[in-house]
Image 1 (cartoon, one colour):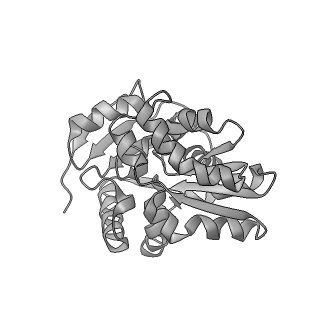
Image 2: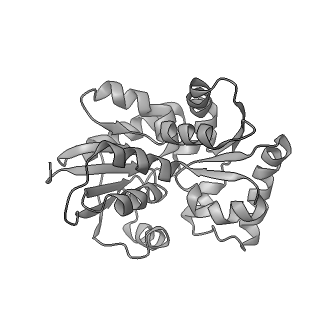
Length: 262
């Protein structure tokens, strides 16, 4: 098992928030990251396109010996997570939605939970199903946030950035008006916006789907000794990914390779 990888994939750099959480909590694991930067963002694509991309992503990961696969993308998990589990029934596949939903249910006091996510994730109602399955008395409101992934992918996430504040204020307004005490950051890009969101909604508890997923993964595998290998692959523009990745993981170790998928 020590020569196997935990394969992590996302549409772009956002999944690095999951990757970083895993890297910090499970330093001995060999980790492999694939960002499908040729097709980012997934959240504005059709369900048919997303499923095709996800199957291609996992086919690439299977070029390496794997001990687990992590869907580090809420859109991919919501639209194609079940398809992956049906396609690879013997694989250990971890998503981001179930862990975040469970943490939101544990965290809320007034039972009003907001979900900020991509249009595709909101349309799938995956978070609604996951949360209500755990507690049907929860009161939910979801807000699609199509501008946030492009902002983060272009390095715009600082809390003092006027464009970031303007966009976030628009998305947060209905959530604050609804009276939520907990918001699920239902996209792995959004943790980089956590400080900016918190500055605009200081009384609301924020749930990172990235951190929640890493906690579940750590519980599934016993701790080992040593330092794991880190490998990174993208489907387009290696240099842009490298520039953006440094914002997620300042001390990123390992070469970034660009590959072409069929």
